[in-house]
Each structure stands twice: as structure tokens, then as C-alpha cells.
Amino acid sequence: MKKYLPDHVEIVGSHPLFGPKSAAKGLMRKKNKFKVVLCPVRVSDERFLKIKLVLRKLGLLVIEIDPKEHDQEMAMVLAVTHFVGRALGQAGIRRSRLSTKSYRGLVGSKEIAVSDSLALFWNLMMGYPEAIDWVDRVVAAVGDWGNRVKKRLGRKSGHFPGLAGHIDSISLEETTAMPLAENKPPVDTGKRAQ
Image (cartoon, rainbow, N blue to C red; front, side):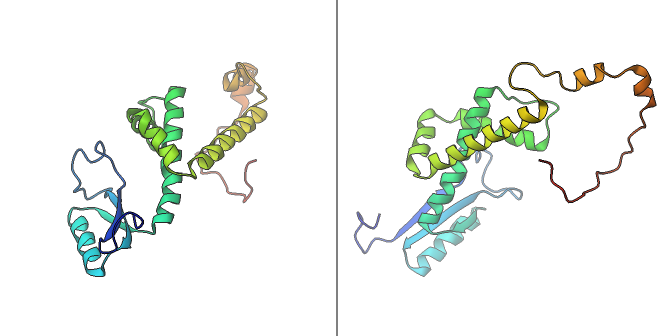
């Protein structure tokens, strides 16, 4: 903007971290305040303070950040959210009456990502140079964890009998001889599962 605007023009980059669907019920919420990022580039302290105060009076949480830092963080936040959301949509995850809070978060990310246009998705991916790096990291990590699960469970592909196969291999006498587990939290031994 500095390149294209004359020196007497003040510049404040702004990025609301919510969209029309999120704010449809209004901005003034006591819980889960909506955020707006401000990147002061060339602005007087007085004018910048007025901008922040107006946005705060609208109920927004104002985050002041350098433009370069904004772009780096948004590459991570938007690329990961939209990439994973689209992948989860393709995988077929859906709402469930048995869902946990974290699962509802995944479904929510999926629903937002797939309801946005593909043009927005590609604009996000092309608009942030670091976006492809985050996509690569997520793909590598998911592949790594997929391989770990398959290795641990002894499965390369096809059906794994899981707990049902294990239960079928135990006799009824062995089942009744097993001690009942106590409902105590697991003891932290300090060792991490591999």
C-alpha cells in the first residue's frame, strides 16, 4: 500500500477474523468475542486510538500486529483450517449424537470450509506464500500418524478385527475370572506412549 498511496494518506491494514456466517447473530457477544486484526502501517497515534476504540465499542477484540507477522500466522491458521476442513468433508465426517466437544470442533471446521467457495480456498492457498508449507506439514504428519496406527495394530490395509476379534478369542470362563477394573484415573508414570 505504501508503494501505491501518497505519503499524506494514512494506512491501517485490517482483517476481521470472522465471516458473515459467524457474525450473523451479531457482534455483541459476552462469550467468544470476535477478533479483528489491525496492522498500523502509516497512521497517527490519535487516529489509530480512535479506530481501536470504535471497534472495541462494537464488541470486537482488537489485536495489533505487524503486517508480516499477520501474514505468517494467517498462512498457518487459514491454510490448515480450510485444507483439513475440506479433507474431512471428503472423508465423510458428519455430525453425530455421540460427538465430543473436540469432534464437534472438527465437524464445525469441516462445515465452514466446505460451505465456502472453492475460489476462496484457492485464493487463500495462493495468497499466503507459507500456505503450501503448512499443507505439506499436515499431509506428512497425518501420513506419519496413519502409519503408526497401522503398524501398532498390525494392519496394512483391509479390515482389522479390533476389539471384537480380541473378545471372540477369550472364553467365557476367562471373562468371568478377570478382575473388575476400578474407576480410577490412570497413573502418570512420566513415560509417553510411542
